[in-house]
Image (cartoon, rainbow, N blue to C red; front, side, top):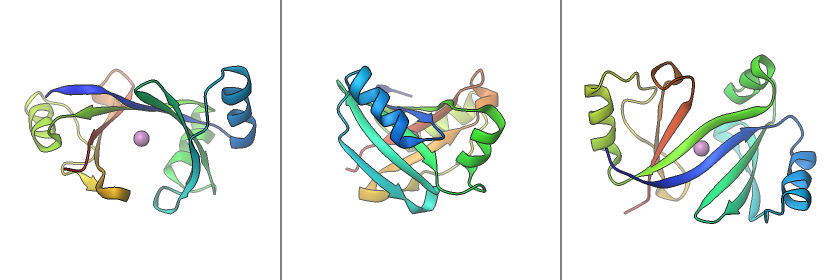
Length: 135
Ligand code: CO
């Protein structure tokens, strides 16, 4: 597996307006855009930081995966997304190394973005998202 860079770090928050204000006005990160991602049942604010982004996620209901995470753990880092050269090869390599995968195959999101998640049990408690840019 070959990692190009950290694409984003996702942070779950209970109040996106307050969190965005803190990251923008106190920490000085620009807010590139905010959007509702229907399939993940979240609103997300993307704040570029150099070659990476911080994504602030707020669940829009009480039943989504992110909402359950927030209820159980409180606000905090939810996952780290690594951009890889070849997502299929990365999944094959991780599986061969005994890692537990949440997605055995990449799922395709907006803009042809292909992602897959590695279970935190296999990664010292950190949910890892792999991402390959659209070719
Ligand atoms: Co992500």
